[in-house]
Amino acid sequence: MERKNVTIREDQQEWVDGQDVNLSQLVQDAIDEEMSPTNDELAAAYQANADHAAETNAEWSAVSMEANQHLGEPPSDE
Image (cartoon, rainbow, N blue to C red; front, side):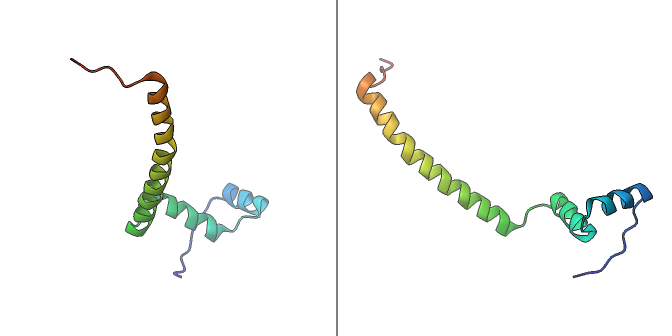
């Protein structure tokens, strides 16, 4: 870990002391929020979304087939 000095205002120091906040963790979290996601984080998010999309598709495909059975096939454009 790299060590850095951070300057904050007096009112901020009072708030930090009153909140019993870990200032280093607060700064790290703020920097993380500003940073772009890494390629690994993006890949994991895409994979999670793909898995969810596949599950949703499987769940709704039965609903679509049931609707077609009750309503019949959609009209053709002819």
